Image 1 (cartoon, helix red, strand yellow):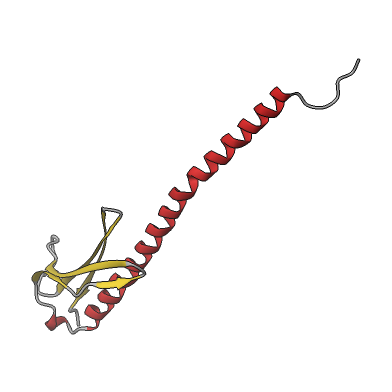
Image 2: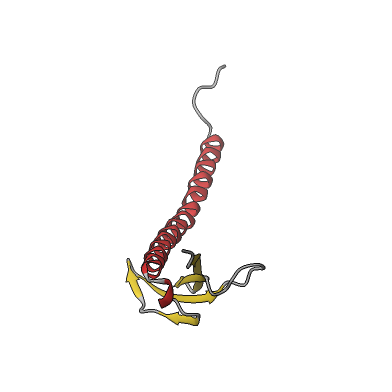
Length: 129
């Protein structure tokens, strides 16, 4: 006699395997959303740092005096508050005349889910004629 159909054991086993796959996929969703959010915040921070850097690079060399980091106004965007700082520093490299070279460092910090994050952009500007 041939059996046709599916036994209850096979149905229950298939159901649990399907349930396991669904649970594993659903656990990936929050991690993926968090990763996408942090990537967006990082892109915003880089754009802000580039904007600040370009503003300082437009200044004449004589206006760039060496100073400790200066905190700029906070910038909010898409639910995140960014805290930028800018620093003009003397470049101390062997064989470099510090009177003709300055370094600019822009730091943008923010907090995401109680984790402090930060990006740093650095560029040198020279006074060579």
